[in-house]
Length: 163
Image (cartoon, rainbow, N blue to C red; front, top):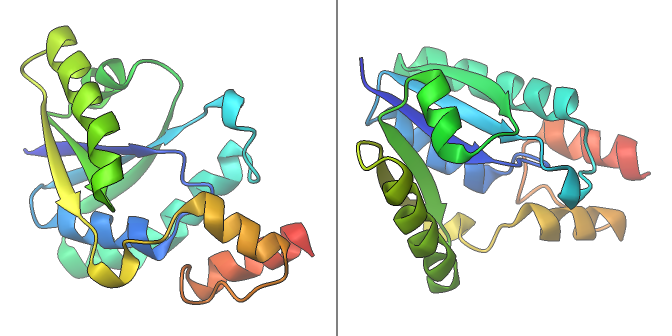
């Protein structure tokens, strides 16, 4: 069974994330969405809320593609999380060239820790490349329309949280 890990904070999950998830399902039998606890970022949504949003947004996609998609919270090293879930592949989404420098460094470090786990980069669709959770939260905080960036359920969660 081919298993991949797609890590992130997902605060909140966006259409860009969902696009990468959809693309990743074409490559694997099981896709684990690694939900980083990352207390330093001070997330808007707590871990349980983020996991619930991911599960809700991925349920139909899992049925549609036949790929098992599961959310898995983690707080340890990414490579250790990959081992924990049995992943041979780490999926990373790239939005722009600026993402690549950081991701390139991460690949090097992960290879130094375990060269048997491969990293695969997937480009988001052009219509989703500018989407960042941080910007979505800022738009929502300022009462802007985020419907082009998130699903209706996530939009409602943002409105409920931010007013």
